[in-house]
Length: 309
Image 1: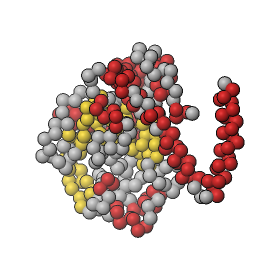
Image 2: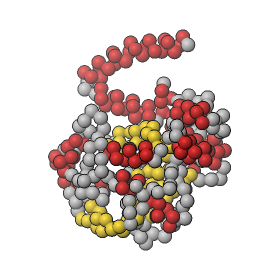
Image 3: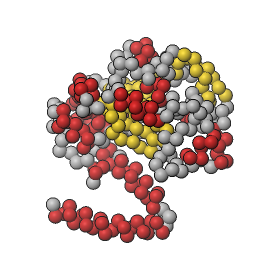
Image 4: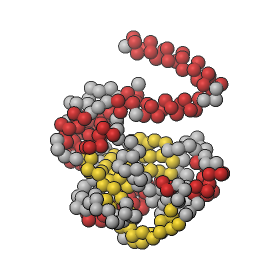
């Protein structure tokens, strides 16, 4: 107790001093961002592989990664040490000849249709079902000379289907984890979930739309809340000209305070615990475990959540 008070007192003295130095050096924002980024992954230093193996036995977590140009988990949302715990499903509508049985070879949308796809040759990761809006780029802190990166090189018409129909074609009956990073098409894709209810959803959200006629970000949040999900975390993406990020990844889990959300978690308790451990959501997992009286809590209830140090 005494050491905690001493640590707090020393911190209160030192932090303002160092802040003034960083401000004089015009590096305070960079330092704050650095510490925040490091703090957000502080729990990644833990290795829960043994605990997860005991929970899952020989089962895999079923994961759909929509918008994974670099392959599954290319964004390192999960520490790579856990990659083998996943049965991975990817989406690649431009590679219909692939023999990989775990690839959805169509675009995803809210209905079965043909959609125009805008290809950006100079910035392929920003290609989209929506046309880029050049007037928005400055809010993402792009320099004027870089606007040409968002010039549409060509368009292609691609066959689309819903997420649910596409998974059924692959004989996938449930999802544990869903990631959607599709440059504005997230809302339309989520409308095609039907009865699929992942235990964790990671969704890219653009607060300030980068594309023309792109659905508003609040529609995504509203839809997921209506499906009994709750927001537990967000991580900014890239630079921005506003005081809050113009783009971020939002993390959702079933709302454990509703009957529907509670049922989802309890039905797949071991998978839910595994995902929460992998992503370092320790304190929240401990709170949910007490709230729902989870059976498999002995391995994590005593572990310190380093994010809150």
